[in-house]
Image (cartoon, rainbow, N blue to C red; front, side, top):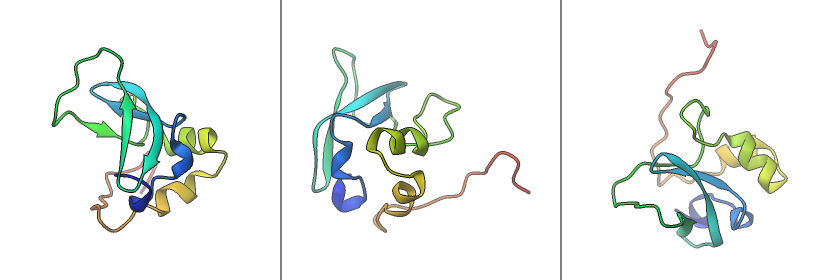
Length: 96
């Protein structure tokens, strides 16, 4: 996933991502369809869950955290993700 998929190029070296149970930071530039995370010496394996944003109740960053890091609004971020990904509504606090 990279800027061709809707991740802003400005997210490099600033945006938080949940990977293998901890928040990490995108390291370097967001490229066409990929980015790299700084995981330090932690063991990360293929297939480990990676979450760009969510409600924040499992430690994942929120869209607002990304917006704050990128000096934009959360709506811009969530609406720019490309059609290459399946969107799935999973609920909302207080929704009827």
